[in-house]
Length: 337
Ligand code: NCD
Image (tube, rainbow, N blue to C red):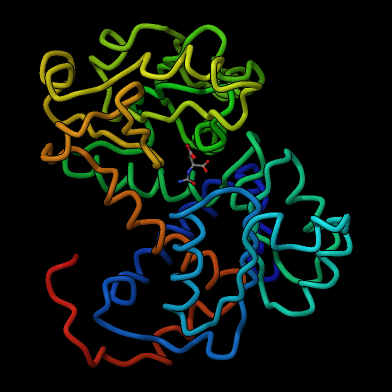
């Protein structure tokens, strides 16, 4: 695809070559993300950051990624702080805000809303999550993490073995990740969910029709026995009609160190898009996994910066200028990476 000037709304826009291009640009962002070099390539550019649903990682890492390229961020968070609360349409908001920004990152609770906004925007829009539909930058950073975590065991995304666990019905990160995996070969996927929260059938069908092996299960222990990755997810309580309904499923699949030791292969990598629900009645990933070196959740979150920097550099067409506008950092940066 041509990245410059494009919206990023769904992973279905990407061919395999596009994913590999994003990953190679993300690799080149490491000196900047790791604070060894600073670049001012986007000096003067403005990111409009519009998050109409709760967000920590996605919002802050989009903003930080833009700052790390030298640009500035203008933020709107929540409907209550926006003219949408006064009845303004997405069309009008998009027409106005795209006059104030060079690129926009947006999250909104309704399926299709970010696409509707993008259609009226005069600048590229990146989907930071539209309801239960898609979260393309998360799927890219997840796959980037998978690629780097399994490389040491000599494994690749082709022939990957992965278990996705939890709320597969409403979880947009797993929807996007499954669609992205369709661009690769020979993946074995175990989908572990309660009956009512299974992966939408059209996504299962597109995995099968692109040659991947899909198993569906509602038993955790046996499903995680022969996989490279366990990808756990939170019950998406905000998509349920009541908390009582969400409570039916919370805490249903808990991974802790003892289950990991008894059931997983030694190098199985544990991932989660975060936030993990650490309340007593949920604990999809127990705190006792925190010292497990295969718990990749924080490396996964760190990778969000690299991938989002890559998307900005590609969309704003500055990939080959990043290093020309760079210098070493002045301050102490040791220890973090
Ligand atoms: C996810 C999301 O918002 O879809 N979080 C994220 O962006 N890292 C997952 C979730 O909220 O459970």
